Length: 356
Image (cartoon, rainbow, N blue to C red; front, side, top):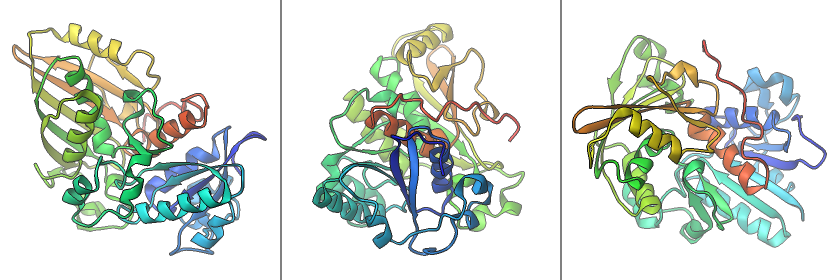
């Protein structure tokens, strides 16, 4: 069903009825190196996938959601990719079963998890944030977690993609720390579209409440803050003190993040822009712009834009990304490309929608 080549890698999407799963399906269907082998959803097993994602009708045909037992039939002695959009807490035990089954069958399995289950370095760090035991602590060492642009190579077989807010904060914070520009205190304000809250409607995502509205939630207590601090420490050797206030925005998709910090040494905006351009040289999907980045310039794409402003003693770095693409499904496909030996931008170069 996808636009795949003869040697394309069979790919299964787990937890396949949410917004991120829909983006994974859209990207896999248009990917020349992948072919959609199955979509797992225990709650909708047997139902047509197109019922959940009618906008993908041209690619899905009569494909049906499958239960776990049917997904196991895709495991042979060749290559298989698993993209997990299962909920936090459910993804780890689910993937543990599939990884064990792949070992028994001799399947060359590559997993990219979009949940939070493998984003932390230890089970204790995960449990401190999510308030329940980790579902597969024995597998933590098998997963690497980072924004693709921040980790050139990993020998670990599987990948955990950082969260959507986390991706935006990391794109700003990691170079500021690694280049010695600013820190250790970072003050971050992020605004996200309603798709970031998931598909199941709640009061704060209901359209009459969200439309023409803006409000903070979980200020200074959001779960992505310890995730970002831990990943910064792994990547730079420095653990920042991160003060994060997220906001719900009156749009469906996209994130605008502002990260502020005190400069270690005086510097002008143009010098800092050049430092960030050098840091992200060769990064196909991250660009540093001269003006201010805008959400409409990246929505629907895997691209992120960064803008910089300074005063006498501080720097503000603005980052825009699509929460469902660069912050989730697109970043996951970017990692999968790399792990499969494909060009990192394969299937991801569509430009932004512009007037979404």
